[in-house]
Amino acid sequence: MDGFLYPILADNEKNAQKMEQKYARNYAIFYDQKNKIPKLLKQQVKLLKLGRMPGLLIIDKQGIIKYAYYSDNMHDIPSNEELLGELRNIN
Image 1 (cartoon, rainbow, N blue to C red):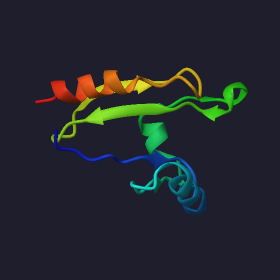
Image 2 (image 1 turned 90 degrees about the vertical axis):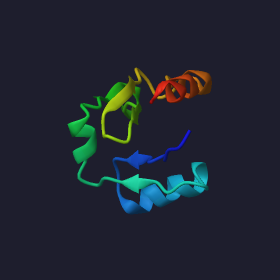
Image 3 (image 1 turned 135 degrees about the vertical axis):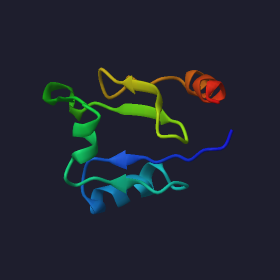
């Protein structure tokens, strides 16, 4: 599997750096202070559930979304096995 991981945080650079240090030491976290990407991807915000709901997309080399998962709450994320299975199915 060849690929790249691009975490994008809809926040400012300072908070992206904090998240990078705490959670993603091996990956850069990109930030989108103007919230353009979440709007483009129709990522929901639910104030009663702590804000923006996580979204995870797998995009192939041609820029086609092959897998999209939009969480219902902050703890709702797909399993590693599910994601690895999806990655294996990409041509």
